[in-house]
Length: 104
Image (cartoon, rainbow, N blue to C red; front, side, top):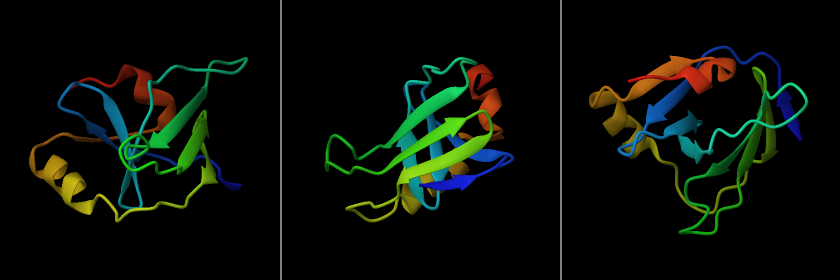
């Protein structure tokens, strides 16, 4: 498992339905933002193509630390969707610890 300490601000996309998506390395991840752990700072993320293409790529964040539990995707990246979100003004840079308070 790859571990990155205190990642700093990350790129988040506000979806059409108002959800928060995480964009890393041209791939997009979703989470229900339900927090786990004794401090309530653990969030699990899955690739947005988990259901449609059975992609098993996963991330976990604990506070501002990122843990890559599986970085293998079975599809091309989502660069076009990320760029569309950028042009639409739907991108936000925040630290992981601040994602519960995202507004748009």
